Length: 263
Image (cartoon, rainbow, N blue to C red):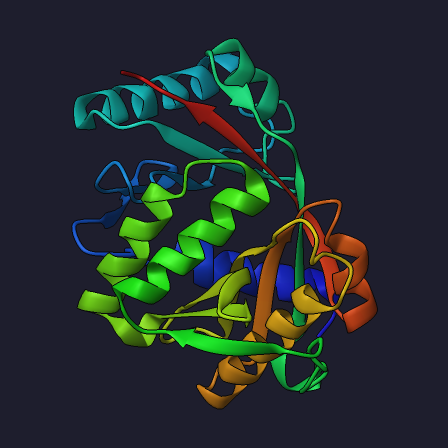
């Protein structure tokens, strides 16, 4: 499928047709936007905005203000997930003017799951373990905090919620070296769609550059194909984009998180 057609399919299925990503979360259409609202540890934010390409600043600002008011009432910080092809073209400027903070842009990439390498050799002494319980979740959180230097408690709660309520919609895996977790990643499966999302791939310092990231991508893509999802998608940072391109992923568009804490 051509990248633009694949991007359009992604928009229809995962943005306009988004579903709640965990217990206590809901997705709703509010005027021109589709937004997700849930507990503080869940993902909260705007997934889609159907503003016209030539929408006046005043109209755009009113829609933005309505979302700030909504999440202020909910008492949670939120993200406006802005894609490179979204309209109006000055939407990012209006978000910044309203007090949002732009995080680093990423590249939305996708590939046919069955076409990706099925097996990437692991370094000697490294094994993969499927995460199915609290002990495994703690290992994922440990890798996340060591690899990225950020608090992984919200990730841990999200995984525990998903594993308890709907384990068929998430799969996580950790790479162990001598019993020590050194790399981990998860995959969100979106029932009724062609897509599975690859998230959170991280490797601790000292184990980078040894193929673990590629091995975890291959493992998750194989699981996605086995479960009937044709495509896997990634919001790729600059560091992972070249690796994914070599594996066969195509760039569809860019995505920039604009974050706001109304509390």
